[in-house]
Amino acid sequence: MSAMTMSEKILAKHAGREAVNPGENVWVDVDVLMTHDVCGPGTIGVFKKHFGQNAKVWDREKVVIIPDHYIFTHDVMANRNVDVLRQFVKEQDLPYFYDVGTEKYKGVCHIALPEEGHTRPGEILFGTDSHTCTAGAFGEFATGIGNTDAGFVMGTGKLWLKVPPTMRFVFHGNLPPYLMAKDLILAVIGDIGVDGATYRAMEFDGDGVFALNIEERMTLCNMAIEAGGKNGIIPVDDVTRKYVNDRGQRSGNKPYTEYRSDADAQFIFEKVYDVTKLEPVVAKPHSPDNKAFVSEIQGTKLDRAYIGSCTGGKLTDFRAAAKVLQGHTVKIDTFIVPATTEVAKGLDTETVGGKSLRDIFLAAGAQIGDASCAACLGGPSDTFGRLNAPISCISTTNRNFPGRMGHKQAQVFLASPLTVAASAITGVIEDPRNFVA
Ligand code: SF4
Image (cartoon, rainbow, N blue to C red; front, top):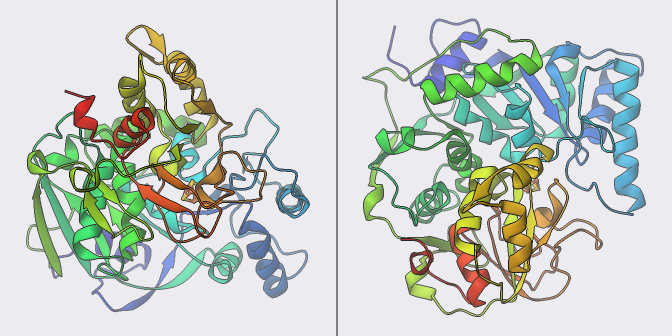
């Protein structure tokens, strides 16, 4: 049997094959299908059209529905989308529905999935959202699919998939205190471009990756899609096992299998980074690969700072931001949006210098919103933090295409929570090294 990468091994297993090769098309069995309020109604429509009005999903334990995008809005169509999900969940008697306005409400799907124990090594997770690749941090094959494919998966539990070749990115060294995973992935995307990994698996490896906590690993995998990657993936270690085993209790403690790339597996590309030599990175408007070091554009005037989203709204992100903001006042409008309700609770229980993260943010003059995608995807005009004017914003989100956060002429700079927090204090793009030792 020929050597395989971990992505190839997972796909082979789910295709009932001994081995697969990049470029082959295979039918794979799906472990989890996730959908949300934006794409759920379309997926349900496809499912009903092709499988029948009274059809049942292939496995009610394997469908996870997480409203998260356009949640806290008066927009009638957005609210209607959530109603469609509610009706479907009722019809199908689905156990994993994290409905708005209930105690089960979570927030952003890519963070809610692992928190609720739906991400496990060795599995295949498909979601109707391009950042489903986030879950590769747990050693699984996770990728976004369209509504048509998702409707088919809903009915059959299978999908026809081309096996991607794998690119490997190796990080060595411990991150200096002024860098975060966001800097690493922005550096990678800047180096290879937004099409540099088109339909390829991006495997992250090396002691520099294993030194990261699980949330930082999620940030790395989250942005694989910004380089065109089919999936991002990280081998499993004790950090992964601990998180998955702890959270697995919430979804039935399902067993899982770990896969690692063979020592002689074929990688189509390999790049090695010494993380100790990197500088804070920014992606300038209007593309995630429009890379600059913060030191190159320091002093660029800003109107707003935004810390949130699946990429930059986790507790690790807020701890970092709080370390910078503690004892300071923001000079520009600063919006804080926890990814999930669990992260929101952490703003009260986590402390820096004896003060809760929430108190630090409020004392600094920031505004704190409810857990959701909020302005990451613009959304209806009453969305918290939305860029409703052609202003300039520095953000911990993952996309800065024109109009992504609202106004088409707005300028969005992507950066780490450390850099965004430092910039919020000075009102210009600021080097976090001026605030963090
Ligand atoms: S936070 Fe942003 S990138 Fe993440 S799922 Fe929501 S809209 Fe998409």
